[in-house]
Image (cartoon, rainbow over all chains, first blue to last red; front, side, top):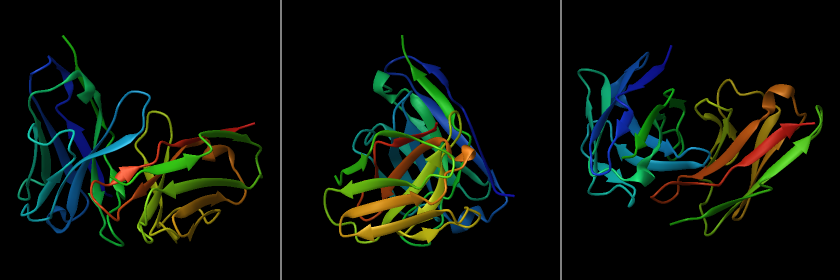
Length: 120
Length: 107
């Protein structure tokens, strides 16, 4: 069974940092691109970042570029999102998601989500 | 960035009704358009990829069509468990973007 489990969320002060983790199981992690997608409370979905299967190519949404860093450890089957210089508008549920690469980019398995709240 | 505009923003329909949701792209996305269902407090679930391909395990009452920059998600016979918010997402051009969502309620 495919599982993605996020952790590391919580309350951070503006300007602070948090690191999210996404531990996966049930599939060969090193074969898949992975993404972070977020959703502000009561709002829609926003794609945040993507990393290719070997970590060689990374892209970010403009809203987080220069502040967030996506990475992965294929030996540990874990995806990460280092979030620095946090702002109130980063308050969201953050989901990790798998990209099946079956026709363009889609998100076929998602974690349960982890809440990040940025507030003083 | 490519903008996706969904209509309607919300709808209420009865069990057994045929329901159609539209997603209009601000520019061509070819067939790189996906649909998701999200229930309250849950992660989204992929329903349709590549405009009309049904994701494995998704009931056949869900279908997708494409006409230029207009895409539709149809539920052929609405079921109580289909009460959710539906999002389209384009994968043609980065940054990948989502529509604002359509909330479907059961009368």
